[in-house]
Image 1 (tube, helix red, strand yellow):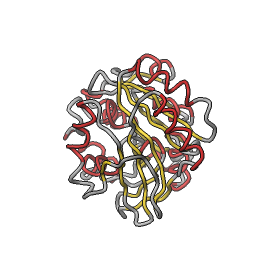
Image 2 (tube, helix red, strand yellow):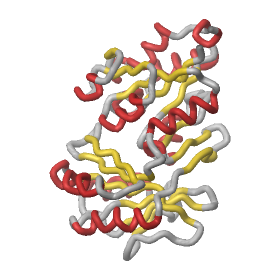
Image 3 (cartoon, one colour):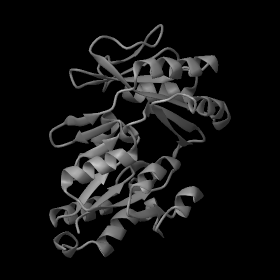
Length: 280
């Protein structure tokens, strides 16, 4: 039985500084050379995931932006992309506007490039996000008078970081909009929360199932720490929560493993994966 091992990044595979430790990197690359089928399922976009995963020798596509993209890092191209329905997008944006919030709108172009539009940056964390990414987007991260979808672009993601009490009413309102889904979870590195909206067809679970099919795996073993990993757990045959995971994730796990600071994912694989795993 061939197993696809798929892990969340922040709070799971990454340490508290937001990096893959040298120990984890060494273990995972060694096991990949022995036949380990390993992938990533993250809320991150390709812009930040590429830098983090550049030294990791993955032999499977990765799931990005909570399942919006299935991305081949070796070929540097999207294998799958899920677009938000245009009428649903209008309703989503109107909900944010009704609560006086200014989300980010992520767009994927026919040229294969990702762009981000925004109208305001109300919090310092929004300004920091822009400052950290503006150069890498080469003019495609820009302020506009109102959010819109240009020709040859496709809306794929609506994102806002704010306090829980500010986002909770928006999350409740989004439940009434068909053909979209959302993730609502706490930030690993700050007291803020993420609210991320995408097409109903996109999820970490659907992305993992697509990777499973592409790699010919028979089963899935998933690793996570936060609420947006629950959909990933729902499609997996085995589920493992790092010890720093939130209680809801631990409750859904097959077992709890060492924390992200203790190389929990890599240590688990070192102890439990062998070439025999891919031969049976």
